[in-house]
Image (cartoon, protein in one colour):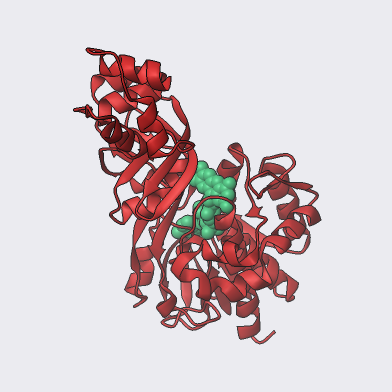
Length: 396
Ligand SMILES: Cc1cc2nc3c(=O)[nH]c(=O)nc-3n(C[C@H](O)[C@H](O)[C@H](O)COP(=O)(O)OP(=O)(O)OC[C@H]3O[C@@H](n4cnc5c(N)ncnc54)[C@H](O)[C@@H]3O)c2cc1C
């Protein structure tokens, strides 16, 4: 059977792929979209379960700085499709948005499903041919092979955008298996690494009552970075928004410490620890002089043994309590991943140098950013950029 010949092919129906399809349809191209899962955008829907943070309202320089060494690379894409455009896109699909006190932007419904539903309806109305349970398995001489419910299928598109996601939460679709296909095509790749993840700690038995407890009013410190936020002690280690914020530095070798009293100077804390009654136990000192209790107290007893006797040394350790992490949690649990297709493997148009006519977008690309709406914004921006460039490349 002769291979089917759609005009443009998008593989992966996450936010990056859907935005690439949107741009291709805008340019007037018929689009076939292949998605391995039975339904599209499962990770986006999962993201919506804890409040879909679509972007961040902040000044453009600090926004861009969150992409660290990828800032210059992503700048033109984020200039074209940045926070203002992300908000307009949500509103265009019937979702009013609001900005929280931290600058994070959410749809009023907080969920992803109404936005996704409206977007898919719009794309379908404009002719998107979405084929679910179509798993991309290989590529040879410009034809893309798929496993489908109707057996193996081959497509020979004029242009293609790959948007298969990173390598975490494999059950939602992004299993990173595409890396083997692209490596086989001579595309250089960077190894995947977890990003925005928790860490493993071998807690002693006395921490068990505190599993699931949040650590509030703390600051997380890693290398030069200090972040006010929350962490959660879990059976397996330590996780939560505050930990994710410093996770890159910790992953790259910095020691993780916690400041249990970010509103006090070391001197002020040491003053409170002066002149304690002779023979007072450590636990009583911490409870009475500092009102420490619950998970915060347990953490000190766990991580600051032997507890120093001098007030100054005590204050110092409470301001920088070392957490004995043994490594990051498994990559599949990470909110996002670093690694994948490096900038050097792509043209400025996000076309793979090794595969002319094939573009890539979203978390497949080697950039990383903290949580806070930066991930979705860059997925949408790179999807839009790649879709637009693919349309231009195909001569439309
Ligand atoms: C719990 C959680 C909460 C999050 N919350 C937020 C948030 O609030 N704000 C934010 O900015 N980001 C958030 N993120 C991150 C965000 O969801 C991702 O960065 C984003 O979904 C990545 O988009 P993508 O299109 O690149 O890839 P994905 O969304 O992973 O989509 C890739 C698609 O490709 C498909 N695919 C993979 N392999 C194949 C194949 N071989 N053949 C065909 N199809 C294939 C997959 O099934 C999937 O549908 C969250 C992530 C998680 C896990």
